[in-house]
Image (tube, rainbow, N blue to C red; front, top):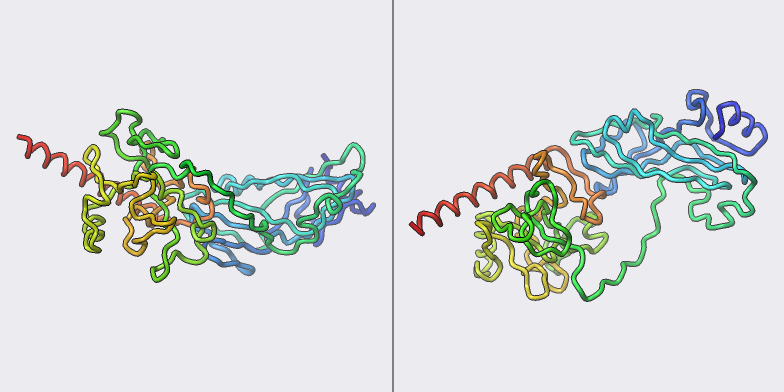
Length: 354
């Protein structure tokens, strides 16, 4: 690992370049990189001046102001500054290969419930440099060079969607609240209480909207569901329905018994023989504008232990959504309402039996 003196020497010898270089960025064993711009993919916005306001539970991208050039004998690591980690920021960093040149794009997530202010020009991450035991035979540009000489925020090239096997996978059961804080595994068909737990609440998975048929209100063009063509959580769903959900869907002409099932006091969406949500037709939601309240909230879920709204870890694109405190409060109110309606149904059932 190179010290501050080693970094100065490497720059003098032309093995390392940081542009622009400022003394305030130098640390005892690295260099702090500052923010040039901030992008919120879910909102489709990018901030280049002033301060970026990043909502809670939101994925964001940062481009460094500094352009870095590494010689064949130097590699580097990126680390989040601890001041941001203490404010709830999570980030995934990796190696910067020997021979790399360009600005750095950092992917991060505001895991706190509240908004995060990130100033343009603010120091965001630290670059720690390492001397290789011997210079690389082939530098980064000669090996792959996918992001060589990049400027500004550079995202990964879109990958072709992987072909799914015919058997069901992913898209586990959906529901408004966890049981013991643990969502049911993907593809499970039991209630959230596990096998035999028919009286336990459904799992904490609120299904995302799927792409919709022509002529219907589509998800926003920049929504993760639409970008990825994802409808996993509309498969093998255990989505619970509010009384209002049922009224709204029956008003469209669907008999209640065709799309609902009743288990342990819950009224939830019925799956067809293939395990798909009753309303999922050809991979598309046939009632998207009228979808259940839970479908509108996903991938926010409620952890039963803490009672807090969190992102469902089983959603493959959950990190790309942006949510603030208001959405979290709405999900908790939804869960409370569903549980209240379930209790009322169970009371009515007891009275009828008596």
